[in-house]
Length: 355
Ligand code: SAM
Ligand code: DTB
Ligand code: SF4
Image (cartoon, rainbow, N blue to C red; front, side):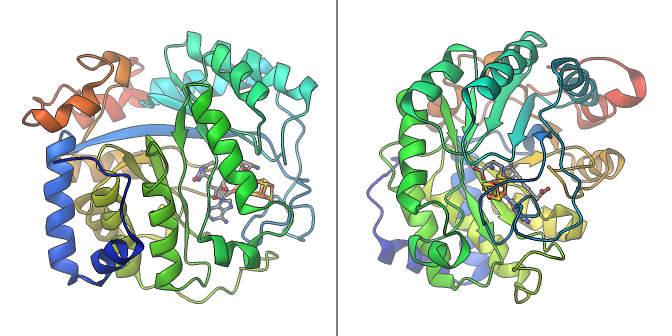
């Protein structure tokens, strides 16, 4: 089975139009050809600079334009970040994602973030950062510091985007993605579902992602977290099956990518999350907080993993060959290398380290 970057929009729409069970069946088949089933990539997020953001993203509690009651915080000190990253590692995360409420990082701040990246990397964690727009030069500096992933979302279709953000363009986002790719980092790029967009917009978002010259290695699918004070607080309710469909179509279009069931899990039942995993989601954010909003607590995630017999995936460096993902298509799913979920995700209790 080939990985394609030449999907047509009509093909993507046809996938969305399939009966739910057929779509999930196909997605699960694709999933098993490219990934070890029943394993989950586990990332922890930390907001390293919170609020007072000049951008006007209509979903975001961190924009200075909306009264959300959020307390702003300056860029954290290095020690505080290392402490949080160590705790995330002890709790079982293999990747640590640092998020900053910037339009784009200023040189002084970038230097400090680079020190954080180096330190987190030294702990043996994969590193990810989301700092807004970056130039080619900034991307190269981040890559040289050892940044593995850069997260920058397209959020929605190019058309609907104009209703959500006016302070930077869709093309600005594509330019940042290109800079990240050219600097040699892995791309983490996805979107938000439930902002009042139409099915057409979801198809266009996934079509754009799946026709990038190289697919993102990581595709976060966020369900909008409605935050009082933001313009999208009253966004119309989303049919959960449409959310699951979006994950399934992402899985089929970008078979090698890790599709992350990202924001919104706090409002999902265990059963809905399991459906998302069946549709091909194989990555989550683990830890009580996303950036500023809540996420399921670690105990309930450990319990969910145990109930579903899901185990944590080791970092790419620990898998047989860094290209484990790309070679998986030619092989049957590898024997489960990961530690048992109970062992991995209950480390907080026992104090051992994973990864
Ligand atoms: N400021 C940087 C930027 O926007 O590029 C990085 C941080 S920003 C908070 C990262 C991503 O979080 C956004 O692109 C958006 O996809 C997601 N996000 C923010 N608020 C959200 C919300 N209320 N619900 C779901 N996802 C959200
Ligand atoms: C992504 O796609 N989702 C994460 C991460 N990338 C940076 C952020 C979700 C934020 C949800 C709202 C908040 O906690 O502030
Ligand atoms: Fe700022 Fe990022 Fe929030 Fe937009 S999503 S307002 S750029 S922190």
